[in-house]
Amino acid sequence: MTLKTAKPAISSLLRQIPAVDDLLAGQALRAVEKRLGRRAVVESSRKTLDALRKRISSGETKKFSIEELESEIVRRAEKIVRFSVQPVINATGVILHTNLGRAPLAQQAVTHLAEAAANYTNLEYDLEAGHRGKRDAHTDALFREMVGAEQTLVVNNNAAAVFLTLNTLAEGGEVVVSRGELIEIGGSFRIPDVCAKSGAILHEAGTTNRTRLADYSRAIGENTRALLRVHPSNFRITGFTERPSLDELVGLAHERHLPLIEDLGSGCLIDLASAGIHGEPVVAASLKAGADVVTFSGDKLLGGPQAGLIVGRRELLERIRKNPLFRALRVDKLTIAALEATVRLYLDGREQEIPAIRMIRMSREEISARAGRLAERIASLPEFTASLEDGASVIGGGSTPGESLPSRLVAVRHRHHRPDLLEKLLRESSPPVVARVERDRLLLDVRTVLEDQDEQLALAFERLANQLPHSG
Ligand SMILES: *Cc1c(COP(=O)(O)O)cnc(C)c1O
Image 1 (cartoon, rainbow, N blue to C red):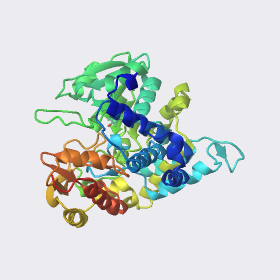
Image 2 (cartoon, protein in one colour):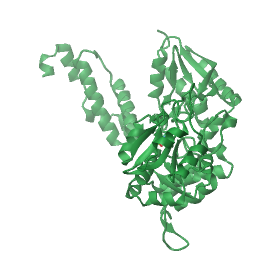
Image 3 (cartoon, rainbow, N blue to C red):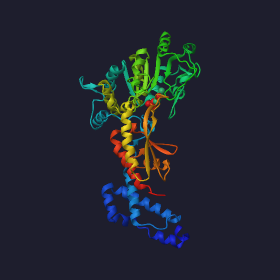
Image 4 (cartoon, protein in one colour):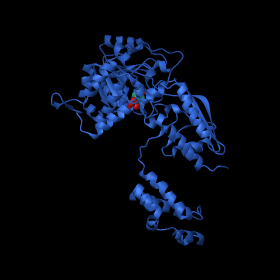
């Protein structure tokens, strides 16, 4: 159809489009085929020729060369062979960036995970007794030592941990929650919704900004099965506020023969006050205060794999593990291996080797030195300027609301191009670089860039400089 109605110039151009087989037979693409495989090169050639046909028909393309086509085919083929999940360089300064997969694992965790992945393991086999064992055995002793838990269960994530706990302990009955803690964590985790799905009836206590012990006390009735305390992970209520202490709440729950469940969210295992993070509750302190079941994430401040930890009193945990839903929410050997290796680092006093912890504790001097070197490399590129300025990194992942870590940022500008364009091209780079744009500049925070990625980041800017027209 197109050919008949097309102007003569367009139809003549369309006739010049080579056949896929002819292109593939050329020397350049034969070499690419060796490197990237036939499937990728054939698919990429078809797509490239289709795209060219469209551009010619619409009048957008008036001439083309085989060399141009070949390099377009190579670019497409390289994209095709790339895995969908790729490592990215996180230059945003958000340490636990949920969109970027939260905590990167420590090397020890990666090694242990790979070893478990490639082999049969004693996941559910008691090697001493020679018969079936429990997969919880692997983390039980670690968390007993680390946080003083009588027992530990590991499920898919903290959302699953809260859901399973409420479903086991409060289904068909009421659970009392303060109105100030009816939170939503990004990605549709909302306490009222999770409660409803678990079959527990939410009984709200107090008000948004002030909930007193007496409010909880009044909310308890004969249908009450538990009190739930939730860490308001990603926001902070300030001003005229009140919230009973954990001790007081535990006292009330136990006086009324009810369990106190605490959703801690982040699950900080050590006090991070020395790193400038104040008021983030530590798991061991909650258990010590008498919380009966505490849940938290594996991939937030703990710095391990995605997981939900349920720790606390044996009698309650046994009930939770007997829930048929536990089977549906439990984790595999890879998660257990990574978690075990991560917690072991804390116990050995080597938590500095956990990337998230190292990033949180990174000194201003270290950040300044690395940022300075990066700025120098970028500033040496044509049409680029780069300078250091004060800014802040954040922990993210729904933890430590209102707290940020002072940082030194590299502010990048290009003489002719907007920062949005730089940001987009960096995202499309390989490996992709994710950075922030604020007003007229691109901001890079090296706190979240793994040390061995500094060079890759500088190289990404060198490629960017070659890609951009030098004057405009
Ligand atoms: C993050 C968070 C959750 C959800 O945890 P996931 O591991 O992402 O499922 C639940 N509750 C609180 C308080 C949180 O901060």
